[in-house]
Length: 520
Image (cartoon, rainbow, N blue to C red):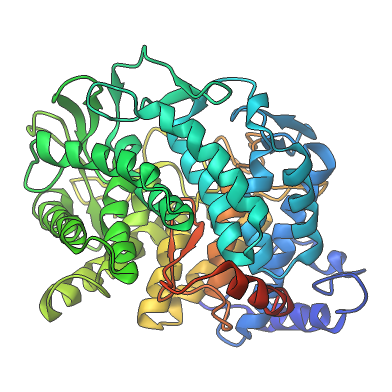
């Protein structure tokens, strides 16, 4: 694919020339230059990473300002109808979820807007409905903890403790698993749930472990680790693989064997909790168990779920009886290449690490192809199929929605940082261009699509993870300052960076805050 980089280079040169006054990224009076919408064939071969980074920051501001104009204090923005949604208790999810992205991008005014709202208006007693334990942990608690690590501002630790104390109530079950939903006002779980997922059980250990370390209160860590230990010890595996659903009250499991919904972040946290414990020098036997479980999962995945097609490698699903394989791949599974690439830095001998990285690169190419070859918008569907008759490498299946998901961008970012290959920046840039052309709402915000084959089939939803994850990973892909890197931080499954520095202190974070904002 030949990049049309001369046009892009001209545009960004003009943009950079306008860095004046309050305009934090030099965009005053030049928006018309981009009104045509960028081409999905544009590349970054001859473009400075810092220039691409400017335009990603511009996109974040467009999303943030649309939310601030039409949905401030609510959970999400409906950009097309210029309204709001409250699907997470009406607790200002986008503010909490996106605030560390604003910090990393050096947007001090937007950070202060969000901080002021959290200080005066974030009240978990006001949750208007039951909330998801999983989503509240990774988005709210993860966001608050990350912002505390970046700023050292005690406001965010206080809010984290308040929320953590409420979430603990979810663990009051027969096996010590967290119930999938709870009332935040009372901390009371919804006990009618009989089934949960491994993702619910095993995607809280990073956050609760961090909260215990920061407070000196082992309660949070103990509840989350007990749940993980029960899942590990009382449920059989299929060559290291686990199904995505389990019962709340007994050692029984069903569901699919997959790297997608209900299990993806459980596997991710096996690796990342291994990294976190190792960096902190905490509980080395527990760290070893996480590493062993991760290694067993990778071996089982390679044996049973990886399929080598004519030109592409993909991840398949097995049913719970282990009798039928499904040759569909979910976009959610596209976090797997990044996980494998990160794992290649930490676990296994030289040959094992080489194989993991090689597989990561093959799978990431498949995920990128979901964007680049399937349809005219250049946006990936939720699901693609891999025809067994070889008539094509991949094709659309039965869910053509596009939700601005971050998984492919996350893997592209991680592989670029691990390998240094410039093609990953080109891939990330092309996906960003497709978002700019087909998901951007001029009045403010970005919208997913109901069908990637139908331009402007907007679903009127700007997910908070678009700001928290998708745009953050894109920005970091082009960030040569390495403000947040893979050596000193571990990202939770909502892209909230948690410090790995065993010597971290709030005073040190406070001293570095001005530099963090100044580098934006």
